[in-house]
Image (cartoon, rainbow over all chains, first blue to last red; front, top):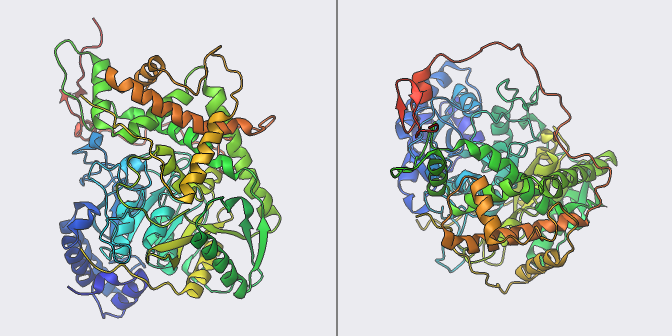
Length: 495
Length: 137
């Protein structure tokens, strides 16, 4: 097997432009890698015929000389993106055999730029989960293992297939989506870079909706430079998404100067949790030290409503989900339960949804229905929306005081074992999102950067949070941190 | 028959878990403000409420699973109860995370005319329609 699937987007682009490599060669290397990695369960649907056709077309386009950066780059696509004629299930049984008649705006843009689709990536069902264990396809196994252990670990979630595919070199990069941390947490667990852009940067059209006011798509890549390249290809105004921002998209790669002198980076004291492992604490201080050495000014800041972000999120996200998932009724697409004689339409709805949704999705849809129901709407939903305002104001205040970016840990721990959380209270699983969820509630951009290795040899990530629409500046800080850390660890191939 | 997976509540022994469990128990002991449901603690969901919520969500739940479901929902709602500590007096509920007006366009048909595509994924489509069990007598 060749090493071409290990390439970064930037290297592949440069080598294809000089004629040193062809997209077909890189694509075939990825296909071989994927076929040898079924044990990871990262790809739910393989689309190799499409990939080979797209790669040949990309080679022809590159030979003509005016190909975009993403031309010929083989990607994995999260199963949440609708792909025309290709199964799109959101890892749910309720969308079994669903083949969209249309293509999401983001993937349309990627294919127009010549990118290559290797297949659809496993994920948590409807993106609800932090360990990939709620998938109807079964859990993704992380390419990473603890030193001296054979225990299967989670790649994180919900974009766990994306994280495993990128870190295991089963593609050059992947799309992800992030509602409460679903790009940044798996990126941190697998030693890769993941970006959640400002709300409105990337079109949501054609992405299966979870919580529409929080969902954003973003790139999951091997380096910050690759994220800059791929993010630019994913951004842009789309009239089909009424919340899509009509703003110019900067050249994110050009912003990666490594010069952050004079930038003010905030460390929020509320992110210092009681009982947080020392390793995370140390990682965080070292990251701050590296940014200081690069010329940034490190300041302590306060985001006083941080502790209310998770409870607010677990009101708002299920409320929106209960509304969005009302469309799965067994009428227009997806699964329909077999009915017995005498059953009416209510039985059809209720049995279809009971059979089609897994336990976590059922729980969240019911919680959402409850917090929106008459008598409880004000006490839960409206109150959570007010708390959300306060959380956003916390950020606005520190940005108004001149803070350019905020540095935090990405996750409260390294990756845990598959099955380790199964018997635990669901709320403990929610706490994976404790550092990432504020960013979704406030609509801000955030990036997770690999920043170190824990005592067991597992990757740990740091998160940088940027000002709204200033992904370029945020990515430059991330690039500076990445260079200072010099993270080179890769999972040892066992699969 | 669909069943909700039963979950045991087993304490883990890491420091972080202890901190989290502390967080939850603090949430549970917090006082709940008045609601329209007199004399009923809204965070503690009983079997009848669980049945009602399941019906609101149009999800069939076996009677034997209602007790477990009620416990799970109560636990999650208990976690949310922390929100009552926040003073939200005079705070506007967020409706849009970015300060933008919803765009408008001319009220004209811009798409359509392909019923076969619309019906292509339907579990039961007949004569250009979605077919469902009888809904009127």
